[in-house]
Length: 338
Image 1 (tube, one colour):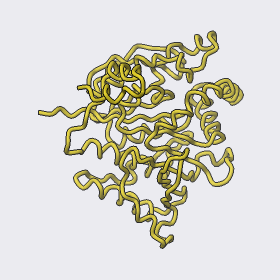
Image 2 (cartoon, rainbow, N blue to C red):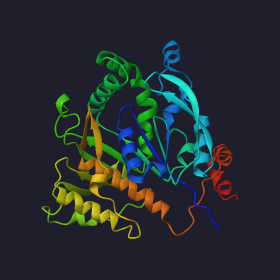
Image 3 (cartoon, rainbow, N blue to C red):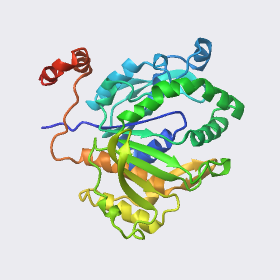
């Protein structure tokens, strides 16, 4: 009997890019009993005080046990238990580790989840969050002042210290994503519009099969008002761009939702009010672009889960490391080893 392995989703982005919001919605959508959540920030080597003394930011690979994260991704891929470290963001300290047994779906979110080839091979779906920097700055100020005890001046000073590492280590991971998510407002970002009616632009790369949304190319633009699909290039590679306006009508949002669900006839469609919520201060608000983004990710996870054919296992880390040490011209032979 073939054992079904967990489906692993990777969500990567800079600090306050929206990783927790996306993850929380997916956990609520699937149910906590079906999802194992792993935060890559838990793999920090140093606590907040040590980082200040060493003058190193948590965005730098040397500040993280990435080799242990690689091993835990492999264990998650094979459905094996792990003793995961835990980092407490509220105090900036490392606390008691957590024993985890992977569920049907594993969501790994954090800063450096796509940093190495060994990590990247264990994901079924890879998502990178790429909001405009001025919007991310507002999100980070709002979050860190409300939940982590910083002043706005301290947040901005810390972002300045991290900028070099963001540019060197975080943003380059965008290249490896199957889906790039770009929430953005119309026009410039204002402090009073940081969370209101944001549009979303999804870069859909052909590295995974996306649902057929070709009907959005139809000339009757009124039918697709607020939702558009276009062919284009991203960093020189052909992609589809799916855009959803923040004020998209419920009718058009529902049409797109129905189009996605019809590709999964054996699975029960979820109502729009079951996902797409986010916190704005003490309020809980709803965003159709966020809901459609979560639905697209859900589509890919369920598609992988419902495949009739057994899902292939990834190459063990030891084998991958051996492959990377072989000259390029000889890798074809090594890659065919059993």
